[in-house]
Structures are given as structure tokens and as C-alpha cells.
Image (tube, rainbow, N blue to C red; front, top):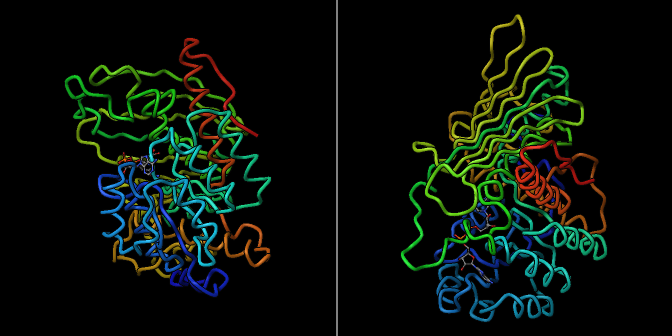
Length: 397
Ligand SMILES: NC(=O)c1ccc[n+]([C@@H]2O[C@H](COP(=O)([O-])OP(=O)(O)OC[C@H]3O[C@@H](n4cnc5c(N)ncnc54)[C@H](O)[C@@H]3O)[C@@H](O)[C@H]2O)c1
């Protein structure tokens, strides 16, 4: 396989683009635009329906922005689930891009209507709800994906496959840090309500851990291909006092015994999306930086260090070249990661509809179970902190 093998060649051919609907994602929303960009870039999806905002007027205006047909712009997601499920050309999947506390009800409404679900993280705000979604997914047989999109950068998959191939030997330690600054700036308006990310009723039991800690947890486990079995957490408020933590220092232990750290903060001035991954093994190390996503620094003891560049002919491992579209030097970034993720969701949904099985290992997208593991992690981190930072089991099997 060459670095240039396109996504369209690498996966089974589809008969048509799939039809995608959105809940959230319209004017005023942040992450919906990233989902939509990835879906469009994947060439596997047409976006045809949406309840794009909690505010009906904004939902309608946003639907027109997205060139949706008038009869497929909805004021509320329940009507959308019923109408789309009844149409012969109804949506094949819904993408949920709304605040955390709404994910459960929305996902449930679409699963019960027979529609595949793509949900943003964290999956839910309680473990009971996450487990209920796992049960519904199993009982309906529908595809349920969760958007830990950073794992879909080409060089992250390369890192995982290098580790699986034994390039650095047995993993001895892993570190993921994710630093941002935005929470230094976001103040509670005088007399107004807290932003949802700092409001326990809408974000869940933790703020920074729910928002970015879940990404760090998923990435550490995905890249090392090992469960994270236990953790101990210290939560801090380092920025404006708002109740929930904005910073967390978490020690972890992998199933194979290796220790590691997850360090997350949203009050580090000068940091925007400073997500950094470092894995060290018996014979070498691999380092990746989300703000320079096209490069992987690989070191082998006793050898000169290497920097592997995305897309260079011969640089990508077999099975990883499909994650890269443009030649090296023509920058790929987060939109391409979302396109890779939306490609894998589409391939899974097409295969299910066609009752076709796929080669083992072809798809690596995060499932509802991975989403529930993220929720379990949040709960374990909060409980560890509340008990003074004790080691706490954190892997949901
Ligand atoms: N995967 C990632 O990298 C990533 C990045 C950012 C955010 N997120 C997650 O995405 C979700 C949304 O985050 P955001 O930053 O876009 O939030 P946001 O507040 O910017 O946007 C949320 C949108 O949801 C809409 N909404 C709320 N309730 C609704 C309802 N019942 N029906 C229709 N629309 C509704 C709002 O009107 C708004 O447009 C969160 O769960 C967050 O954790 C994930």
C-alpha cells in the first residue's frame, strides 16, 4: 500500500452517499461545523436534515445556511427523529453536537426510531445513562460512534500501529497533556447563568475532565492499545472561581503495568489546543503534538532520532496511508481527521445495511462502549479526588 492510496480505494465501495442529519451545530454552536466539514470532506455523506439549534428561529435560519430543504428543517429533535424515520429517503444517521446533558435523550430518541447515531463526547453526564445507551445499541443492532476525533489524525494512527508492531518495545510509560487558555477569559455574566461547560447540571460532575480529559484518556489507551485500569486524580481551580475544576493532574496505570500521566488545564495562557502525546517503551519513544499534527518524532535507543512526515511516499505503515489524502508538504489538519472519522462511520453503516462483514481491524472508530468508558473515567477521577487522590479503578469492561 502506498501513502497515496485514497480513502475511496481503501474501503469497500458504496452505492451512494449516506444521508446525514444534525442535532445542534447551527449558528452559535461550535463543534457542529467541524463535524459537517469532516462529513463533506469524506465524500461519503450528504447533509440533508437538521434540528440545528435549541432556539427554533436560529434552527430555521441555520437550516437555510446549510441549504436544507424546508421540510427537513426541524424545530425539535423528537419531531425530526419521527419524520426522518418515516421517510423512504430518511437519514441514515444523526450527528449529535449539543451540550453534554442533552446527549442521552437525543441519542435515545434516534436509536428508538431506528436511526444510527454519531454522538460527541462525553457520551452522557451519568454512567447509568451511558450504560443504557450501550444496551440500546446492542438491542437495536444500530451503529453508534463517538467522536474522539484526535485519534483520526493520520500520524496518531501511525503511532498506534508502530507501537502494535513493536517499534518501541513494551510500553513503559505514557503521558498525554492537553492545555488550553480559553477558560481564563470566560467570565460568568453579572446575574447571568454559568456557561454550560461550568454548570454541573449541564456539563456533568467535572468540567475540564469532561471537556478535554476524556480526549486525553481515549488517546492514551488508543495509542498504546492498552486499557487504563486505574487512576488517582487531583482537581484544581487555577482560574476564576466557578465551582468545578479547570485543571486536573491525573496519574494512570495501564493494564500491562506501565504508569502514566494525564495533565489537563483550560487556564494556561498562550495554549490553544496544546494536546501532546508521548509514549516511551523498552527500546524507544514516540512523540506527537496536535498543533504540528503531520510529524511524528520517533527515537530508538542508540540510533539517530527520526521525524516521520505524513504523506511522504513510503513513510506510512500499511493500513495507515488511507488516513492521508494530500502529498507531504500540503498541510492536513483537524478537518482531515474528522473526514477520516466520518469515513469509518459511513463504512460501518453501509456494511450493516448491506449485511456485509468487514475485514477485522479495518475500522477503529470509537464505539458507544468507548464513550461509556470516557464517562466512567470522569466518574472515577471525581471520586478519586473526593477521597484525597486514592487509586481508583477506571476501566469499564
Ligand atoms: N470532539 C471534539 O473535539 C469536541 C470539541 C468541542 C466540543 N465537543 C462536544 O460537542 C458538544 C457541543 O459542544 P459545542 O462546543 O459545540 O457547544 P456549543 O454550546 O457551542 O453549541 C451547542 C449547540 O447545541 C444546540 N442545542 C442545544 N440543545 C439543543 C437541542 N435540544 N436541540 C437542538 N440543538 C440544541 C445549541 O443551540 C448550540 O447551537 C459537547 O458535548 C462538547 O463536549 C467535542
